[in-house]
Image 1: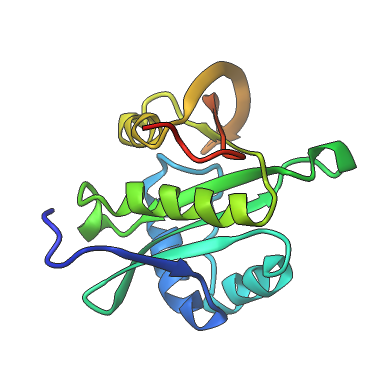
Image 2 (image 1 turned 30 degrees about the vertical axis):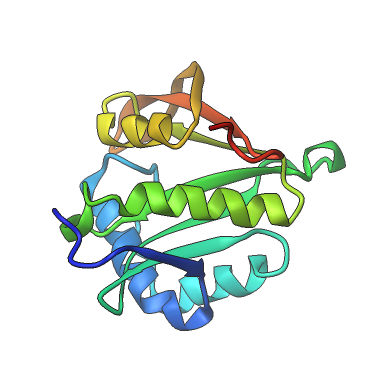
Length: 173
């Protein structure tokens, strides 16, 4: 979908919770981006945003005044040595997929995380989710391996591809 205007990326606010929940629930329904199976309410998303606000950046993509996607980070592992590694998720509304919003989100998230002292972003992607894998490659992530039988979704074992991006320096070029 071509963008009608450039995508702006900004820090997510609690007021964005309803839009984020709508987009996240699309990802849950599609069954290609997460092991989650239960829809999230705006109140649940607001609680997550409040909980992570000071420690783990979240950003939204805005186009024509509407939130069209979001990306956020969570704790990778509790040990202090991993404090600068963020586990991320990125979701774009169905009607805005393929429009550049995802790349804008990952670049914006990396910048926000870098400014907060993070040195790496990591995630896991279902192997058949070629759109997300392509997006991550375009955003400077590399695939570092596969976790086999990582979890079950709808009763089926699913593998995941592990991706990472070092963000403690601005990208070259």
